[in-house]
Image (cartoon, rainbow over all chains, first blue to last red; front, side):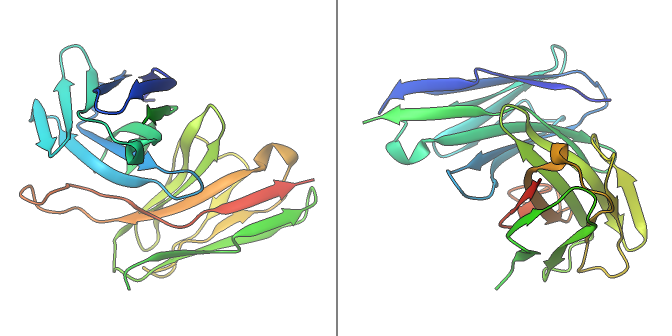
Length: 112
Length: 118
């Protein structure tokens, strides 16, 4: 089955700096890669996603890049703010996008 | 209000006592899933359903059952719970959007059910 590895497990940045979280996947059949943000005590919420036919996607301060050849994808957050502090999960899916494998999460702390 | 609901939100039970966690969505989504969340392990998919009467195993299905008799409901059944099933459980629903939509397949998560098996 699919295996998704996510690094780092924790990340501390100063407010205003950029943060990068990286994920690798094992199954070349995976073709959809969402990123979810989970604030403390709350449910995960989608923040951005990318399909395998796209190399990069941006949405304001966040962006995701995908390298299909290397089987890795990354989340980039620029101009970080304290409200970006949360746990971020990457995921990979195939088979109609419903069988989903998540990474183990990255706890991001933005220091004011 | 569009939402995914789960009940109960908190449950403490004993080993071997059958339990059901309900999940319901009011968005007419075709797809529903169950996940468990454990520290250091992230979210792991237990079962998913593509539509009514269509279910399939995720990565950690052992010890769980599901059914999808109605489009809006997707209950998770633990026939004989064990302490290693102590976890935070999330139900989620989704549908495939067009390629032009902001997101292709956003999953909407329920509020979570914290289960403790003694």
